[in-house]
Image (tube, rainbow, N blue to C red; front, side):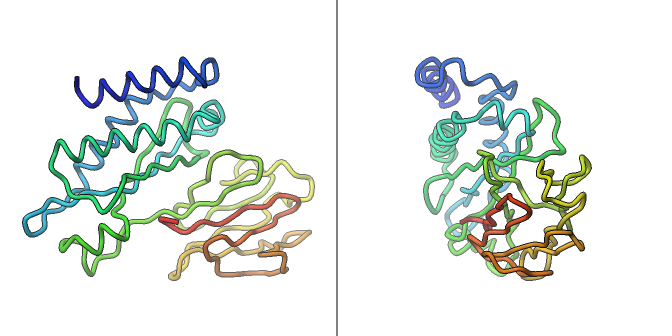
Length: 232
């Protein structure tokens, strides 16, 4: 039995068991698995006597798919990790540890579409000669209260507010139309108050602009967003 068939069989048992009736997303787990395997192949690098491959993966889903997947996401992430470990073993890739798969949400994706990113983890970077001295591709995220999936920070700026056109839309009367923005800076990401009515609070201290670090809480209106650095 191929590792993909084994993956599909284990997933089918999971869906038919604990999560029966809950997993209705049009995104197919097998397609995610195949896409991640290709991303692992594309991200490999040749070292002395070894072929190194990425072990940190992010899957971005549309808001509708993320909500429909719901509590099934951790189970799917674990099964994908097992699948990728088998794929690496079959291909003879060297990994620094167990593959890690995280799910994120991207409001710009349509229902049924997803995007994947494969990254070298810190351990991969230390071991791989091809990666030394290079800047690794990384993705920061924010966890929005009452949402089960992280929102991926991408581009130069992501606006938070009540308007439909905002990158992170909050249905909160205490939030301005365009309240604040996550801004990419040299050191990582910062939060910037866009002259909002009720202000921005980082770790409950009011600020107009602040550089963010792992675990910082950003309160906008009545909503708290928790910042996560790549790989954390």
